[in-house]
Image (cartoon, rainbow, N blue to C red; front, side, top):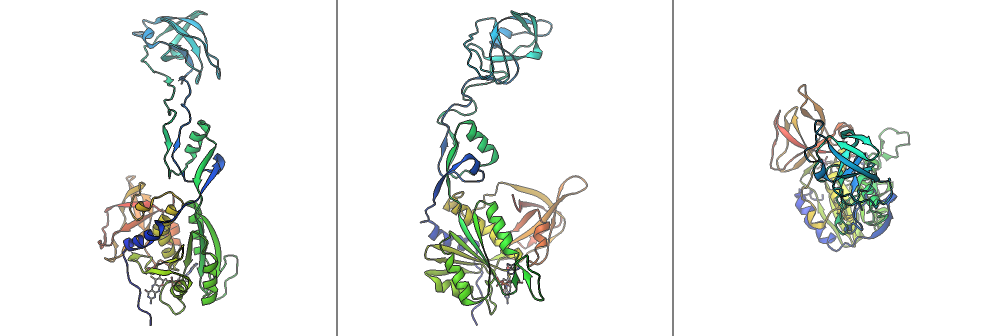
Length: 419
Ligand SMILES: Nc1nc2c(c(=O)[nH]1)N[C@H]1C(S)=C(S)[C@@H](COP(=O)(O)OP(=O)(O)OC[C@H]3O[C@@H](n4cnc5c(N)ncnc54)[C@H](O)[C@@H]3O)O[C@H]1N2
Ligand code: MOO
């Protein structure tokens, strides 16, 4: 009988995969604004212009020289001479001298000499040439200065930035309509197991519908990869071997199931038979996710995920996600395996949790509020074969391998399950 798998610390996984990823060249494509949401900048993006390109009013009112309103109040207003109006969307040639004002709409260009804008509510129009101000303004009040948003040549986005909805607006505002982004990583998802059937098929006794293809491919899509659902491959050496071989042109191949030590678990043999160096690691000290496999076949990465849906999910969201982020350009190689999660929630544990020392454990938790409005974390304890534990969870509690658990009422740090 083959020896039972080793429990390697996740660092070993990172050390092994980095050796290969160091030579990986990422492809770049030029995208339109409409296609850039969620994509990763392949270079620094500098502002091609000043934004705004001219100083503008942020209110409807009168452009003034702040000094001319000094000391003004409702009881002691200051008088200003109206010399004209600024038209929206047009250049103004007006120029203010001491004691002068010009009507300006919200967003209108400030005339030369003006350094503040009086809101219409703080003024009284005496006649067509005169207004009074009941407010004393500071320099810059109600004004957005030329280049205050961003100046020409300043870095707007750094290489590896992931474009959010607000970023697309910033690009549009600067007239940047084509962007060099990294190509999406192509990832093949293979499910193995003779018990598996596609979701649309009526299950006979002993059969189970394929969950992992769907959770994994959907998650990959969410984190910016381009997944290919290969489907269910029968537990036969040649079938599985051919399926993996067909996908070796992808950046990454994921195989769910067949990673443990059962009689049919021949994934290891298949991966070793496909090319060099073959399997680099089998077994990780994480829970769930123990029987994970890492293989490199010529230039391709293959990761074998444990079949239990909770286990496949945990390995996908903790390790595979990082590899995908590297292949999609979001992360640099030296950032792999380093915990840099920014969005951490703190909540009080609703019950004690016991964890085996020596294995890093990931537990889904539901987040609610207690009667005082404080966040409460309800661990969804149970077997990694249950998909609804994940469905009920909002976040994940990670228990480090040196810890034996967490106490009831302890304030714990949680990561959002899906962002
Ligand atoms: N003697 C031992 N048995 C097992 C061990 C062990 O250490 N010694 N480890 C257990 C752990 S932990 C895990 S995790 C599983 C991993 O097994 P495999 O990766 O070989 O996966 P399978 O045996 O193919 O499947 C396990 C389980 O998951 C179901 N499954 C598989 N694929 C899917 C899918 N796409 N959708 C839904 N469900 C799926 C499958 O029906 C099995 O029930 O091994 C333990 N055994
Ligand atoms: O490691 Mo298994 O992946 O505990 O369920």
